[in-house]
Each structure stands twice: as C-alpha cells, then as structure tokens.
Length: 179
Image (cartoon, rainbow, N blue to C red; front, side, top):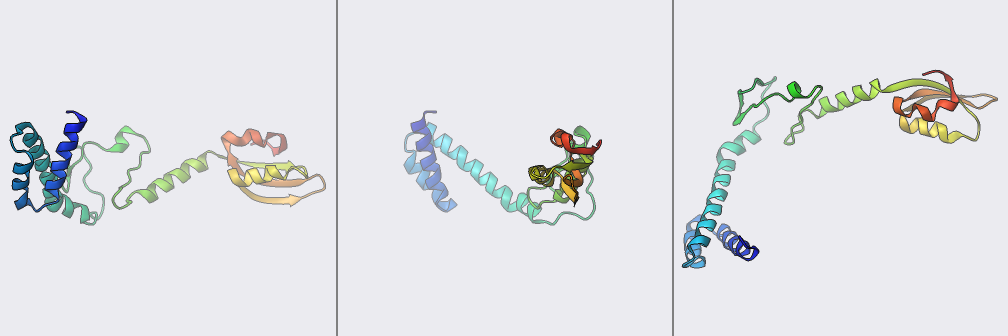
C-alpha cells in the first residue's frame, strides 16, 4: 500500500469512527464509491475497531476493574485467571524474578525488598583513616554506601560504614581493617 493510499484509508476510517455506528455505512458508501479495494480495507479496519471496543466493554473492562482475588491465584501453566490463561510462571524461567502489575502496582513492594536484599549482600563493612584535607573520601562513602560514624583524631578522621564491593578500591589507601 502506498503512503497516499494509506492516508486515504486512514481518512475514511477516522471519519467513520467519528460518526455513530448507524451512520457509518452511508459514509463508507460515499467515500469508497466504485473503489472495491478501498472499501475492503476500510471495512476490515472498522470491524477490528468494533471488536476491540466490544472486548473492552464486555470481557476486558470488568476483568480490569475487578480487585485482585484474595490470596495467590492458581499459577500452574494452563490455569485461567479471569479472561487470562497462564502460559508459565516467570520464576520458573528466571531465578529471583518478580512480576509487577502495570495496572495496580501489585508486586512493587516485593521488587523493592528483593533489590534491597541484593544490594545488602553486595555491601562490605569498612573502617578507615582519612587524613584531614581529603574529606571528599568521606563524601564518597556517604554517597556510595553509608557513613555510619566518624571520630576525629590527631592523624585524621576515623570513619566506618558500608560500601559496595565493586567500589572498595576507591577506599583501599585509607583502610584500617581489611574488608
């Protein structure tokens, strides 16, 4: 289909959808007079639009607006939840997978908990002596992990906290205790 033809089809379909269903036939007759190919394309798109509208008004909308059922629904492959059929459980393919509903956010708290757990596992405790004038190191620790405490001494600031294992090399020159 040429771009010009597609523009023509879209114009007729758009005009038809802007009218009540009972007026569409007359509009399509007038717009497609003698052009069977145009008429076939327009009627096909109008039928698809009608099917989508019917789905949302009947099967889809009530299922989307219903609150989620209490407890965990049946999740074995082949089971049905409302109008949907379970193809397989995400967790069976991807270890530690968490599903989140785009509709109502169900699962978001579980995802945040899982991310926090993974982040905690990657953190290492450290204690270091940071010479005066190198406060940027303390700022980095605060940003990357967490500065849990500090103490001022004659030689500099003794600080302790947690940092991601991957960034430990940044603090290596200042470590008092091996991580």
